[in-house]
Length: 495
Image (cartoon, rainbow, N blue to C red; front, side, top):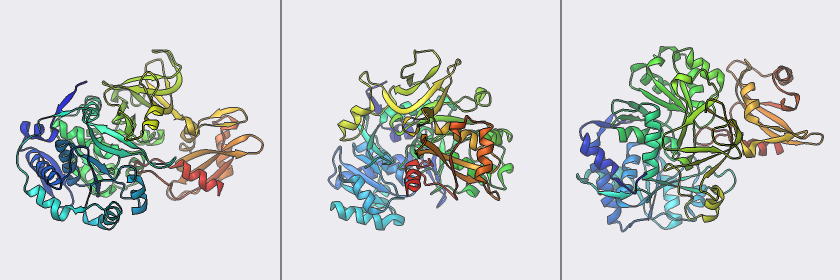
C-alpha cells in the first residue's frame, strides 16, 4: 500500500487545526486537532527525556480518555510502542502478560494508580500519573511534526484474550490503521462532518479503531465516555450528537431494553455491529425503528475491518457480514474463487498484522505458506458474493458422527420468546460422543422451561442439534469485546 506515512496528529492539525477532534465527556473539555498534536508532541518529548528510545515499550492503564489517544500519537511520533493494559485484570495477571517484554514506564490515571504501581514495582520502572507529570508534558507541548514515519514500524500492541494460555501481543502498525480507515470509511461513508462516541475499552481494537481513529483521520469528532452507559448514550443519540454508531451485540441488547429506545430518530444514524453476530430478532427490532444495523467481521489481527454489510442488502441478507472491503482479499480454504461453498476464512492485505510480537512460532502458525492469515473461522459464501460466518472451527463438536456448529443452534435459540441471549458448547456424552449444552439468559420478566424449550427446538432443528442440557444464567462471562467466553462455560460444565 505504502512504505511511509505522515505523522497522523500533525497532518490532521495542519489541515483542520481548529476543528474539534475530541469531546471529553467527564470534564466537558473540547480538544481541537491542533491541541491534540501539541499535547502529543509534549508527551513524546517527555518520554524521550526520560531516556526512552525507539522500540521501548510504554504501558498504559486507564479508562477511556482523550489522554490515551494523545499517548498513542506520542508513541507514533517518537517510535515508542504503546501497550494498552486491560483494566479488568488484577496486577498479577498484568504482570504475567508483560513478563516476556517488560515496559520501560507505566502511564496511568488516578483510578488505576494501585495496580499501576504494582506493575511498575514488579519491573522496577516508574509509574507516571496523568494528573501529574503527564499533564505537565501535555501543557508544555508545541506545534510541529515528526515528519514521515515507516508504515510498518511497530506502533502499539494489543493483547489477545488469552483463552488458551498467556495472551499473545498482536503487532499494530500505521499501515494497518490507514488500511482500516479506508476499509471502514468507504463502507460507512465517513466524512469530516461525522460525530461518533467512544466507549468500548481502549485495550481492545474496537475501542481504538471502531470508529475513533478513522473518525480522527477523517477530521470528524468523537465524544469520549469513560465507559458505556445506556442512558448517556441514548441521550446523545436522541439529541443528534451521534451520526456514526458502533457497538457489540451486548450494547444493542442493553439499548433495546431501555424505556427510552423509541425517543431516538434511528433512521438518521448509521449503525454498525461487530465482535459477535447480532441475533436476527435484534436486527429486526432496530429495523422496525428505522435503523439498519450493519453486521461486520474483523479481528485484532486484521486491523480490524474486513467485512461489513451494506445498507441496501442489510435486511435481504440477514445473518451476513457482507463482502470483503476495499483493501482486503478474502478466500475460503478449499473453495474455488468465485464459487459458493464453506471453508476456513483467510485474509491478506495491508490491514493484516505482520505477526505476534517476539513470538515467531505463533506467527508461523497463524499464516499459510503463501502468506494468508488463517482466522480459525468457518465461513460460507453465497451466489451473490456475500459471506456468512458459520462458527469457530474449535467450537464445532461432533454428535453421533454429525458436525454441529453451535452458532447455528444459537441463532435458533434466540428466536424463542423467553430467550434474550444464548451460548452453546459441546460436552462429553457416553452415547453420542458429544452433545450440546445450552446456557441461556432469559428476557426480563421471563423464565426458561428447559424441557419445553427442547421440544420447541425439535420443530426447528435436526434432533442431533437439539441441546441435551439447558441451563438458565443471569449473565455470561465475557471478553472485553463483549464476546461470551466459552472456555469458562466448559470449565463450569466440567465442574
